[in-house]
Image (cartoon, rainbow, N blue to C red; front, side):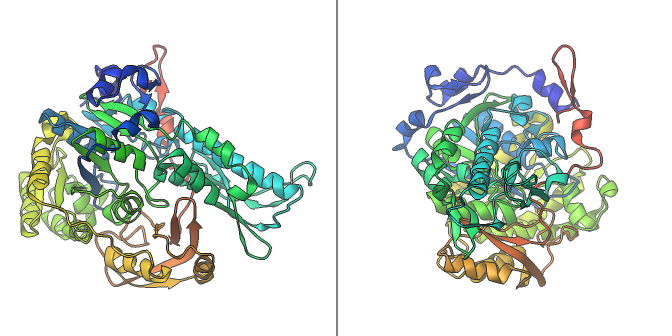
Length: 557
């Protein structure tokens, strides 16, 4: 089979105005970025506010493994399959980050014959949204540092500056550093600092959760950047730079319209990671896709314990979204890894490992059911899957009273997603979600953290290390105790230990610090050793990328 980039470059895409016309947007209402991408201004989308919402399908997955699950390719393929069944459908996805693209992933726009187009532009600079967030973040940082180095009328303690710098690249060497060297006239006030990847910036979460320009500015103003010498929080609003930040973000607030390889409309907008932020595309993209289409398929980052839980408890709580169905993507290869098989053995038949791996799938099914949402399990097909293994998964799902479908969208596009699309349609027609939140926000922070740890992760208890207890006390005293929880935890395990596969239970979750993202509107318990800026692997994906003399791209996956 040809590479993803070759398939994408040989595709015959439609001009973006034709895609917009399908959903009722006129050509002169778009802000085009070339022939195949455009922003749709909020002023245009607002005219659909009174229209009834379509049905909302959330795609999530089992816990990620190096064997691959295929969540994004399944999401895109499902949209294409529903389109082939003559449904008025749209997708809503997050924007890829350059750091993972050049590091491990090599791209994040689907694969095979289920991709968004043009994948090379979407995977790289796209419409500049991520760069705009980095600029706004670093402007805030610059104004903060300037204030401290001059009069410091807010009495900011340089040892308690919360805001770091941001860049959209994986640079482990910039995680921790000292800035301000050279004296007050040359470099400012020396203090410890460092970089985070732009997707980890609170401003990226703010952008994804904002519902309008006034809401964006209000959220930006609430961002806590530092604390004073007597322990009081200092916000961006107090530094008088919210207007300038909003100016940098004015275009980034509008959703980006693209298409699948089969010409289905897709909003790609917002980019927070799911292991350190809330991990879902923008509320605006999902909200207006629901106004423009009868069925919307959106995707939550990583597995159901991270992106899906945060979609339900943070995103749905913030804007009244209510999912009608959830698709849990798994692969037989990944299930075998959760059952103890080594990576180099997952291509060989191993019914024992597969059966043991069902524990992980079952836990995520259970997690989705806790929110009252019906489930469809999608088996992302690989050529090494045997009919016996597929039948084992089908029978297991049947015993759990959960629909199961094989998805061949990677190799066949929308045609290969027909069985999955029909299973989803069956749920939408015959079952009604009884959606509910996992916890009420007015509960104490520790109680909410314990609820997620025990109900979603399978932990027996939570212990607090280092400054975590003091953090919680300060957050509640500052009036932020009634915010929802956004856990920062490894995506590689349901636990806080990335080496543990399957679905361990009875273990202890360790929280080492607790942060407040007042602008985004959630509290972040940091579990285990979470890094806010990734490093590159021993062989970065970037070393295989190139562009030839004729402009043809090589190696972008």
